[in-house]
Length: 293
Image 1 (cartoon, rainbow, N blue to C red):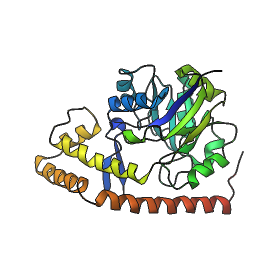
Image 2 (image 1 turned 90 degrees about the vertical axis):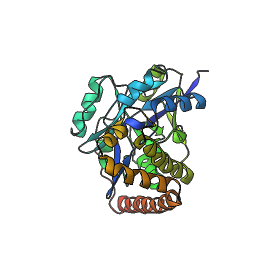
Image 3 (image 1 turned 120 degrees about the horizontal axis):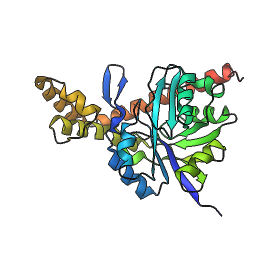
């Protein structure tokens, strides 16, 4: 019997930049590439796809620690929604159409994946999933706790490899979602996706995962403001441009958040909002059946 390999198709590091929600802007992830590697090795993963937003820098840094483990990827912001490019050699610029983005991925002999295609809170391709030349569909994204978005992706996935990913924005989320394949090498992983011979699995991220994530963001932001963290990343670059007079208020806000009940309260409220959005999308999809071509 062949070995069964385990891959995580969707993870982020501190190179992913910033997330915006309403009037708030905060680091998308504060995980270093080295930490991602350590966690993946401890879990026994055979393939770790680092897919930072609109950059491959985090993946390139991570590859220096374990080239056999890391798959260079990117979560690209196309005009029609986010698209994962795996097994890339070069960065693909955001702002292109979905068709152009996928074409550029394939020109690098890469794998094009539709992540969280029916997400209620992330940019996604939605019903265009089956009209574009995707190689695989992320039918299980552990970050989506609502349950409805993953169910829609699985229900409407036609003729593509079914994949699982953690969409990890902190190190303790890595491996929450995974993809099983025959073999153990990156080439085995790539061929399994191409040949639609994959199995998805995993568990949804817990509320504790989200609480730990938001607390870690605040803690690492405080370290960067105080210059305890010398890593060259988007967070360091942004803070370096902030006037010293404002750094004090940012530092105070980060400390207060990290050491207060706010992470718990914000996580509960956010979870409730996102489940409501997921349910609304599910009802809309059944009220107006999705068109397949």
